[in-house]
Amino acid sequence: GAGVSQTPSNKVTEKGKYVELRCDPISGHTALYWYRQSLGQGPEFLIYFQGTGAADDSGLPNDRFFAVRPEGSVSTLKIQRTERGDSAVYLCASSLNAGATGELFFGEGSRLTVL
Amino acid sequence: GENVEQHPSTLSVQEGDSAVIKCTYSDSASNYFPWYKQELGKRPQLIIDIRSNVGEKKDQRIAVTLNKTAKHFSLHITETQPEDSAVYFCAAGESNSGYALNFGKGTSLLVTP
Image 1 (cartoon, rainbow over the protein chains, first blue to last red):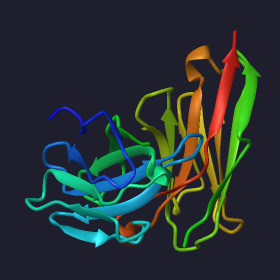
Image 2: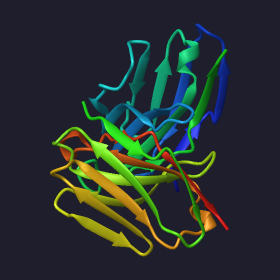
Image 3: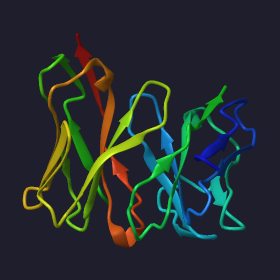
Image 4: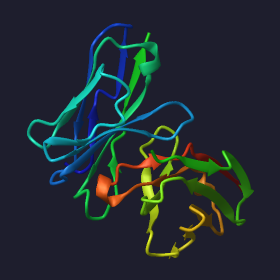
C-alpha cells in the first residue's frame, strides 16, 4: 500500500479483556516495528521484526504482550488481560531493510483505551 | 540500554527566529541519529538524520550536528515558520540492532507569527 496502515484507529476495552492491533506495512518493507506512545512522551520501542522472525523483543513490557508476523508482511500485536496502564497509542512502523537506510515510516497509530 | 535525553521540553520562538533542540545519548554503540516531527494527532515523520561518521548535515532550513565524543546531537531550524510548529523527537539507534530506535521525550515547538 501507499503507507503503513493500522487498524483499528481507536479501541476502547475493559480491564482484563484481550486486544489485537493490526499493522499492514508498506509493500516490500522487510522490517517492521511496534512502538507505544503515551501522552506527552516519545515513542517507546516494543518489538522489531526482520521478515517473519522477531529480531528484538526486548521492549515488550511483560508476557501479556505478544506480536506475530507469520508471513513477513502484516503483523498483529496482542495484549492479554489488559490493564489501565496499557492505555496509549500503539504505533507501527516499517522500513525497507533494517540494515539499509534506517528510516522508519510510521502508521497513524491505534489508540487503545482501557477502562 | 540506550537512554536519550532531550531539551527543552517546550520552545516558543517568533517567526523568522532560529530554534535549537538538544539531545544526549548514553550508548556509545549508537550510530544513527534521526529527528522526527509529529504534528498533533498525526504520525511521526522523519525530517533529517545523521550517522556517526558525519559531524554535520544540512537540508535547507534544517541542520543537525553530532558530537560523538560528548554523545550529544542537536537540531537547528533557521528562519522558522508557523508551519514548523509541532513536537520534535530525537532518537538514537544502532545499525546492528536493526535501527530499533530509542526516542527522547520530545520538544513542543511553537512558532508565533
